[in-house]
Length: 366
Ligand SMILES: [Zn+2]
Image (tube, rainbow, N blue to C red; front, side, top):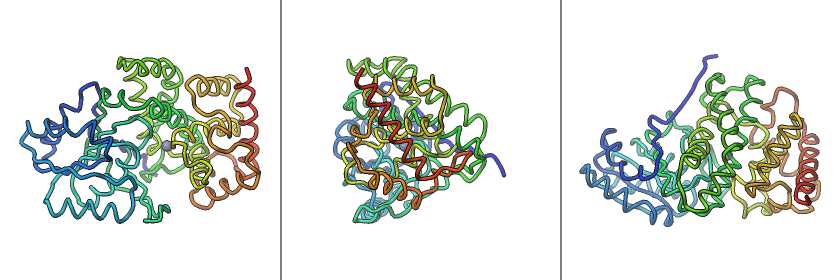
């Protein structure tokens, strides 16, 4: 089995980076671009993007994304791209918009630039994207043959987004090391179809460690709208390292729980990263990680306002049947719970949730 590592062709991050997008699109051969994104994402980014493209003689048409990566929405955007004969796609926004842009560019067969306007998920740098039916039921995971050509994270824009998104991004990122280490030990085949490389594992470890070390401080700076080295470091961990690491190493228990929880109506108002943050706690409880590791991660979540109890993800007093339903749903839909070096059962997963919730409640009482 060959070792395989995938990455975006170019990752650019910094305050004001958005002003440079034209230079990169031009170097990649773009002369006519379709810019798609949700209304908020477009309102904070389209002026700067259009201005920069204009400076490099790149035509641009703008189309609003309706908010869900469904088959019909993707087809609509592909048709617009074809009619206008675009040769480049730019997707701006959070998780759903960048995921949809990946699928649209795949069908248009044009290069792709992604501009994450929030740092809430690990979606921006990966090759894959989920697609849903019009009834919002998961349909398939579209695995593009390559990662995005350009990911441009303009930290001045990310800093203006509500802080909840940044905190959620940290929740998603802290799972990275634990899931990567589990997959490594279990010799899991990664999302690129290869074995996990040691350098990929190093990046995954750095991702979680950097977020835990600097996350609380970064949040304080961002609350004052200050972008500095600390903020840049955590954005790099959440937007870049978390994203490429999960693809290069694999996912296991934390995202396994997330898949099951997402199907419950009780958790609908919580963000992907908030649910993954809590699920990471259950992941390390199930693995029985050393006490100091558990203590550090629980304290981190508490300090930045990530959920530490089931109630904080909408599952207060949730009956056993409901939690088991989520666990079994994940087992059926996706095999990530099995990406551990030991057999994992539904009962073990349930017990870990209860223990985590108990420990979280004790932490809140202090
Ligand atoms: Zn995630």
